[in-house]
Image (tube, rainbow, N blue to C red):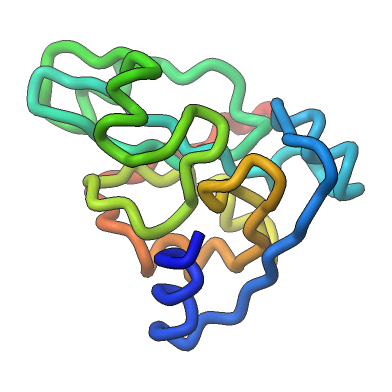
Length: 153
């Protein structure tokens, strides 16, 4: 988490690191623990495409990710979740702890996160959560495409 803190401080970003006694395993658990809307949770997934790996920062209320839509956005044929061992190899972090910012991967960003003044996501440590503006998350990542948020949420 030292690299994450250095990045955030060097970029003069407003943020909070929220410590918690237990790992948060799901968007619903995070929403319940912090007393926030589930849409404010922002899990970072790593996707495997035929053109390489991509991070996807999603709103917790998004539901299933449509891999065909993602493939069309990225101009590739196949998209799937990266295997857990590959996620750790590429990012240095286990699934469920992948940080919201600081990854050296192209990024898909869920526009639904802009509904909130702050979002909550990974820090690289299972027992801490990053609270940060979605505008800052966007600025600190290599966003290559945006996912529209489903209107029915």
